[in-house]
Length: 453
Ligand SMILES: *Cc1c(COP(=O)(O)O)cnc(C)c1O
Image 1 (cartoon, rainbow, N blue to C red):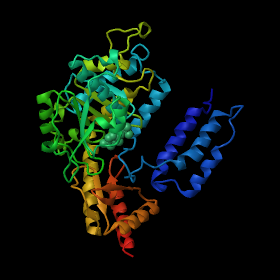
Image 2: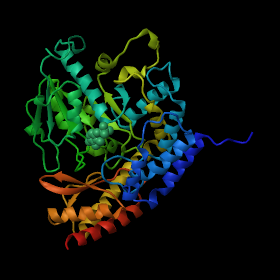
Image 3: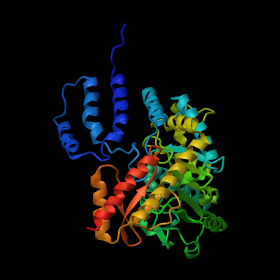
Image 4: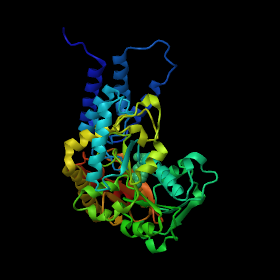
């Protein structure tokens, strides 16, 4: 029988065409493409259409209206860019359509989570017996960690939050800097911890918490630290703060959304020194190791606290000796994220992950040198993949940014840093090459000259 073209063939060809088109298209959709978004609207279809035609249309209108974050010239946010193997593993996982809630429902998903979790603890050099859960992003990773922190700290006070709720619970305190990524405040809210409970701490010129200026910690305090400031890329002083916290029984959580991966690099690991002394950590898969979106992990030293929060006992879930994925995450039914993690770690190896980090950081150095030569001022110490820079004054910075964005050849965005309106570069995709950096520097150099006119 001749092979009949299926919807999978259509999607596969569209995917190949899309990846091929990346170097020839603008990073952001152009006006003509955006105008075509309107053609997707219309009444609810009463009778369905042919599935191949639907996927064709999705490709025709959808692909030009994506942001080319999987290409090598998007530097706007730390979003990574899916590696081919990430996409391929995610295809297969979607084809399997496994429900990763329980081991029984998907032995392959359950087993790969165990393996990937163990590999990640080793790769990131965190306590090997820490609990871990595969969630959507760093925000939910931090929420999961905070829920465990809350349970653990309150339990130590003899208060069972699972049974009694938060209303009459001893008051928790949170110590962090105003430089913390705003999603951490959202995560605190999901965990029932309000903004009035936050005590902000001063930071230095790179956005690092100043340990000697921290308020007194106590056994009801959660300290939130950062591995990788979203502007400067700076790392907090984990060693000092963790020791202060340990001395009084406070909890330390580390937001390591992208920065925790620095731990895999021989050159950069020193930035994370003492991070293993913390109590919980969040890290994104969809950022530096370049997995597809919707992929993060949290790790928590206190596995009993994790079980206290997420442990679900129901006869129909058929508990057995295997690790039950749903006992570690807020969801029951969910995507089997461990599959892609396993495939990417197997493909890259520890050295391959480190190499993505190292190459991104080398590109950032190259950018910083080129930008200085062009006449820009770099505002941060470029220790990682992040660069914050300005032209001569705010009006010129705004003109330069517009020139860069209008070029369509690369994309980066604005930020506010230490009282300056500035531009920011984040290098986080393995797809970025030296040639990309050189070509982008040319455009940014022209932008500087144009901004002076
Ligand atoms: C991206 C990021 C977050 C939020 O992560 P999501 O995966 O988008 O939920 C939190 N903190 C830092 C430092 C980040 O870079």
